[in-house]
Amino acid sequence: MAGSDLVERGCVTVISVEAIQERAGDRWPRRRDDVWAYVARKLDEHLSHQDIRQRLNETDFLIGMTQEEGVAAQAVSLKILEEVLVFFLGSADPADFRVRSVSRIDGMHVSAAELDPTRIAVARQKIPETGGPSPYRREIDPEEERKRNPVSFVTAGGETMSVHFALEHVVSLRHNVTAALRVQPTVSRISTGHVVPSRHFSRLTDDEIAFIDRSALDFASLFMPKDSRSQPPLIVPASFRSLGGRKGRRELVGREDITAEQIKRSLFIELIDVDRGTPPGRLAEVNALVSALSRGVFVRLQPVKRAASPVRDVRLRGLTLDASDLVGFDSHLARLLVAVSMEAKGLSPALVVQGLPSADYFGMAQVAGFTHAGRRAVAATAGERSAA
Image (cartoon, rainbow, N blue to C red; front, side, top):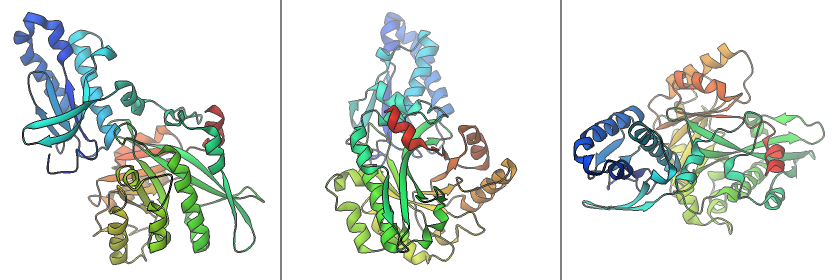
């Protein structure tokens, strides 16, 4: 564990059953084997075979999650502890939640800092289907957001376009916790109000695409965590065309409102315009360059056959599928999810479907083989801003 990046990513926690030991008093030596056995049962129930678990002493258990990031891993650990407390104490008092984030491992010595359970619990909150505000927006100044959302630009053809940004929750389907926050830009024609599907962004010029990418980062900077252990990482879509050049990569890190360290610890880039014609070698090169600056790279798969062909030999952090532009019956969506999942199997740790009509489709996504999902925050920008 010390030789991996799990500690740096905030994926290693320590949970403690000290509250049970304190209540048991003199009976603890007779009860501890039962407590240890039940904790082991809950660890097996919630963790995968790739995750790491180790009892450190009579009350502390080390948990290392390989498939979740930061706050999501902490939320799973908190849920395990909560279920153990309820079983042995009959209730789970927040005062008994003792969860720590491991910051360093030196040989047999583990350094850890106390975590605030109330902040961790936010990752388990459900977002209303009606487009209610994300709990992660509560500390954002509405005036600052109004300066960055929406924005507009004039195309080379003289048409004025508007770009609205929404904040989506990417949910771990196995653990039902918010694993990341994703920025979703919606581009529309001001003259008609018609939305431009992301698959048509290729018709925009390089300068127009670069403007959308910069504006998405401007909006994302409002939610950039000061401490990656207290808030989920961000996923920001960007163009392969932009980040394939030095200028685009310089603009990614050369910002006054976000430090290079914040980007490295908390920002994933989702390349949205990779298709079957993208040279795999060039994609691998851009992935390596952008991954060196950020937390990692996702690639959006197009809903066509052999969409994963350029990514097969590229070590990506995740693959995504945008369902927001897809129309048709549920059976058509289900077939597409299964087909994409089969093609993408084993190519990256995370497989995300975003833009689903509602959370009711999450079960379909999980059965199809996706690890994470998000529902499209339809018109969420105005609703969330007013609610904030």
